[in-house]
Length: 158
Length: 263
Image 1 (cartoon, chains in turn cyan, brown):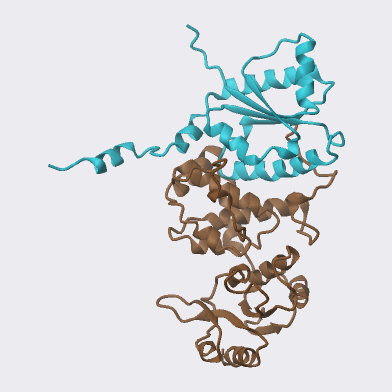
Image 2 (cartoon, helix red, strand yellow):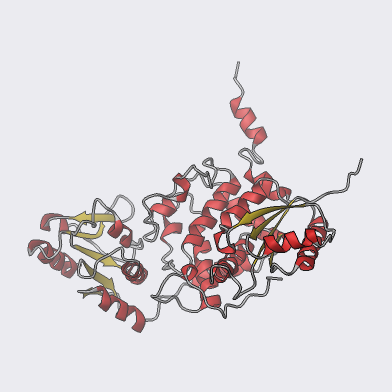
């Protein structure tokens, strides 16, 4: 059995550019890492920062967030709004010690099938090198680190 | 202090205000007093121990909302909150009379929030040296140390939401933590959901936070949650300059926003 660590990666992409771009990767028969699961959103502006955190708590080792290049947004300014949010969010995550290297932001247009394969492959390689993100999942557990103490408290004294 | 009392009494007697929000002597520390009559206004005090942000009461439906006129005692940072609340259409101009704490330690009566805004523009903010140094100290740690520091601090949190209750900007009637479809945050007090709550709170504060520190002061465990908010103020200032009145930082954008992490 293959015991090498296979990273789980969740990709939040916009419908109009990156999702179409990922489609192009497929129709162009470009092979890329199969570790990624794609979640389609109407726009990068729709991608709530909580979704990224939910992905980590739910077992993702890495996250890709991708959408239209600046000035190419289907809704004119969704990606500009998203960019502001990411600037702020990323610095805040870093301040709290959450591993920002595990979040890959990128712009992939509907014509950039090859770039999408590249982004995914690079991210998978990076995350493979970083290893599984167990700290986050562990901290999300209810009893994290206190199992023994709580077990003792629950003991019925004779 | 006598001047504050007599002025508050005068305002209440002449019905210029319906209630007056200030401090009275508490058991250990001064506590907020919401005076509705001249007799109650006799208990008003104000000194350097009155560090809370009373602007939080201005958006309370049972107190100040509904066309009632309010007098309030405010520190520099509370005045900032009041100005911000006006920009966000949470206050009506003319409904609030502010007794602002000025640099010389005296109280000045501002009849309109426009005057408060002018004062804020002309006056430099009081020093935030302790918070600056604290945030710098944390920022200089390695990522692993920061993770250890914050999980260590936030694992103690039992989700009482005092930080939310103390914040004048947290006035949503339906907060994200009370929504369970979807359940954005786990309701139990696990380290990560505590951290996610702080991330949410502070992200929603981006560009709106007055940096008053009331969230940290309100924490019954003394967790440094105000340092996260302080850091957010710094991040916003570094990336987007001083906050403007035209909208909060995240509801607007500039095509020239600079970042270096999008591939």
